Length: 395
Ligand SMILES: [Zn+2]
Ligand SMILES: [Zn+2]
Image (tube, rainbow, N blue to C red; front, side, top):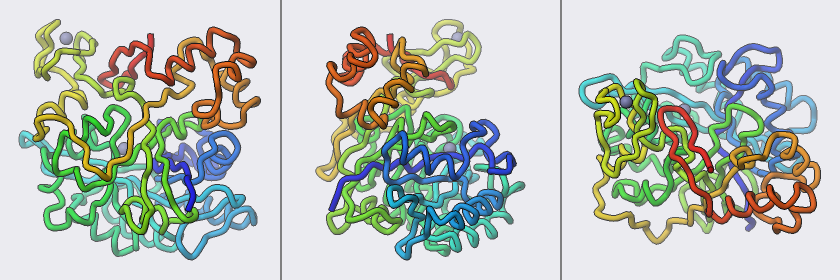
């Protein structure tokens, strides 16, 4: 058994021929570049690419397999350069009966063992969305229906960024996941926390106690891959081994979640869309205390305050630690030039964030930035909460 790092939520911007997949994501974010980035700069061993149901991406994958540097394995997944296992995934937006009688939308990340499986899934999903070539199109399916389709193609379904305000189950569909999945709730064995929450917050909801928490980057550009990730204990890298780890079976498990301090996330607190301020009241409010507007985007922290059913946060015994990490991009004064310099010296971001001492860092970037990186690592920085789509800031 060995320890590996996994990021299960990475988007694709364009196909290799330049066809748009996720319009808001970077052009350089294509299948082959993601594989390379994981090996060369990030140092992660499992990556879930969640735009693989697009027929343009399926074409790219076939081309990628023909290069001879990558191959599919019987246990599921594509191995590249013998160093990274790529999981073929699809993010699906489901339609739910929302809260307060509104229509709700929720995101789900679904993973499939083989190219053949995701091709079948893509075919079937194309009858439920307007344009199958684009990322995360609204489908006419509910989560309850989607579970069965995913299962038909040997896949697994993980509710994505479960608390975010616009596109998630708790954010705008329901107070309880059990009401969505009903008797199929036991088929959901993991949920994704999202950047604006953490284990402590999520463990205020009792129906999540038996679920595994995953922390993923939701990267829309290459540098953002692995800004959140999971450390897993597996025998080797494959789809099957990851599924076992998510199910906490046969000694396979997640041994740590690495993620942002939730205050840094884009939707941590409620945000007034009129006066454009983050509302940091102790209790959640529906009306902006600054300007009286009710035009507010609810924060993840605030939403959890409203729906939690445990008096205090208590994690079950199986829960691994959640370790705060500050990606290099959030360190004040550390621009992309310095980041490149660090990567050239130390190889991968994992090494920089987890293995280096202040002296190591100082030799390359000078005393001031080295000190800031260490302080951020130790959690000794003041953070202004994010909200309404704006990241939090370290001061
Ligand atoms: Zn999403
Ligand atoms: Zn306001």
